[in-house]
Image (cartoon, rainbow, N blue to C red; front, side, top):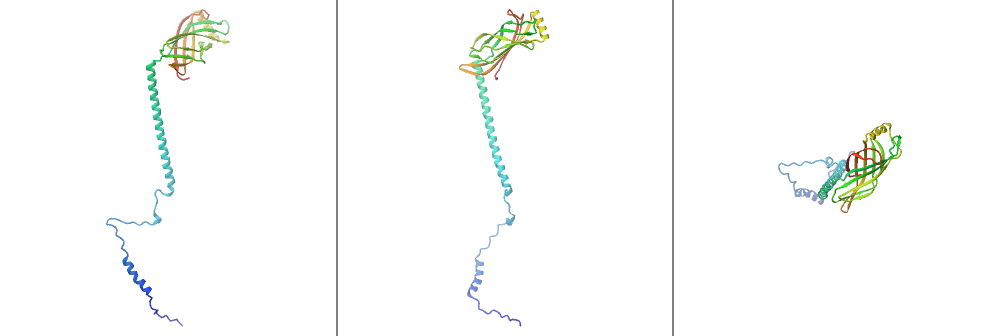
Length: 264
């Protein structure tokens, strides 16, 4: 048999009536949402579709780029400072050199060969051991500059391309406005001349016109007041002609060129 369903006749409690009566009151007390001003729009984007700037995967790349750009700017500034300092130093050096030249008026010393005496030139032998006694005149015409002739100098005498003898200069100091004639002995040992060179040399002796070449290299230091410079190389190249190859040889013709190497 089917069950019967009876309507609920139980009285309604006061709490339920109070709750139902308060719902309209709460709704009436809630202020309505303000409407947007005319001409404006409100766009609501779902939270799962919002984006960050920069994106999370590019944040580290952006930080590295910013750091690298800052480092590059710092390097450029340091390079500009270095170039500026070098430029200032070059300008100061040029000014100092100009002032030095105006005050001291430096000039290169003048060199020439005064005398040559020859021994041991036996041209009848294919092997010779000559000895040249050479007097070199050095004229220092500077008013306030002295010259220190240092060690490790070289002096050589050639006939064409053959070295006949070699030696060194004495070590000495030459004051300003001074002319010094110094002697040096140049020796050769077991020099073997080519047959053609020996033949032409015999012909030159017969004509009393023997061409020789002298090559001189000397490290010096310049003294200006109480200050000495670094080592500078004096270069002297002379073409000299003598009438014979004996102790009584006389210079027929001579021509010397000289210069300086500021850095050894």
